[in-house]
Length: 142
Image (cartoon, rainbow, N blue to C red; front, top):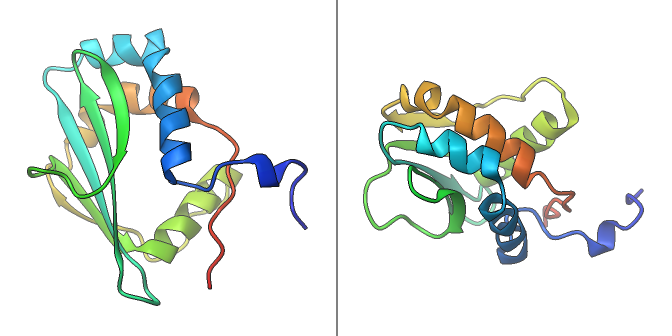
């Protein structure tokens, strides 16, 4: 059964969803202050391969000392500080479980790069989650 008003919610990690999150993040003093305290800028990238079609989806999170956090779709131009690689549907299942406060299903994403950046950005990451959380529809698996 669909949630009330679900049809009006953006599709998870669609251009609309990313725009809404970025608008919220741009207005968040908590996020900007947390990023200003970072010793350097950090880029997280997510490379997701659709288990059914083989299509590759890219998501990015940029943590900038000057300007805060923003999300982007597409492959990063340079190397990410930390790259998460996963199946697309596995990542969506992981995200849905996290949003529902449930245990995360296996498999977990593989990480390549500087894993220590997660500790470095932890305060900014939590502020980002609070500021950018919006109700969404999860894409249906076809």
